[in-house]
Amino acid sequence: MVFPEYRGRRLRRNETLRALVRETTISPAQLIYPLFVMPGKNVREEVPSMPGVFRMSVDQLAKEAKECMGLGVNNVILFGLPAKKDARGSGAYANDGIIQQAIKELKNKAPEMMVSTDVCLCEYTDHGHCGILINEQVDNDSTLELLAKTALSHAQAGADMVAPSDMMDGRVAEIRAILDENNFEMLPIMSYAVKYASAFYGPFRDAAECAPQQGDRKAYQMDPANVREAMREAAMDVDEGADILMVKPAMAYLDIISHLRDEFDLPIAAYHVSGEYAMIKAAAANGWIDGDKVMYESLLSIRRAGADTIITYFAKDMARLLRG
Ligand code: PBG
Image (cartoon, rainbow, N blue to C red; front, top):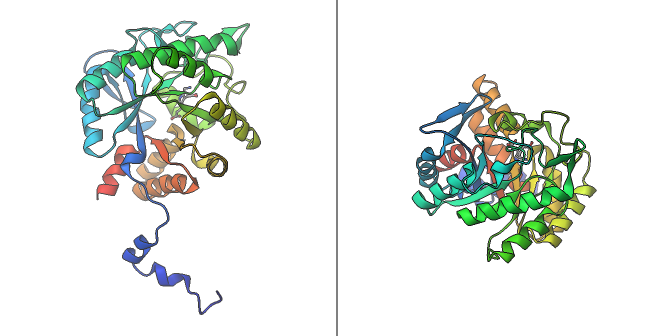
């Protein structure tokens, strides 16, 4: 294959040819759109650091879901802002909690929408950490029970999939066990298996009001320097019964997605997080980049690295772009 016998440019000559040999595609069916749910009525407020993303009250959800489904985006993941926070994050597992209400509303008014839920305590604790504090440390084993209760309450409210994002050791097994005991053996777990202690979560923490009041999350989320550890985390979650493995964030961790793809045969999800979204939106708003093209190239690269599924605030924008 030496020039001039091989000419790579032959298959790049026009869009029809390029489309014929394109190795990677994106479809709205592969995207999950995050929704932030808050108390109140008729509330729909834009997150300042995430233009185009809104926090909304429960009554607004059905309309939003229908808009998504009209674009072919049939998956959402819910995040909640409770009316009150406390030390044990009780709003996370309250039967009438904000997420439990949101699930019921969606399953009632837009039953075709696949509703996944984020299972974590950080939005519900007054200290903002993802578990219970004992001597100012997040205590792993006593947090597990509350995470399991949270997952079960989501299932009972009608959730289609639960996604634990807390990074406690052993939580997938604990959640699988409580779900199975309660006849939810068919409910899948999408585990945030490989979640790094990342600065890219900044805008999300504003949106969900869940920044830790003290310290950081480095004692439970992973060190961005590590790749072998990512493989151990993923292997553990496979053993514990995860159905989908997630890598988070996405673009700075494409190598991790690719390693996981090679090593595991479970579906892989990647979370294109708030900071990744905000950077593109900000640069585009300044006219420094073409926002749509950078969005497409970013999501395409995440797929190319090996993700089957992408959780992204761009889900609706991307679906619109694909529709043309
Ligand atoms: C909750 C959670 C976070 C995100 C998803 N679930 C925040 C965090 O871990 O600090 C971040 C999502 C994003 O940045 O878009 N633990």
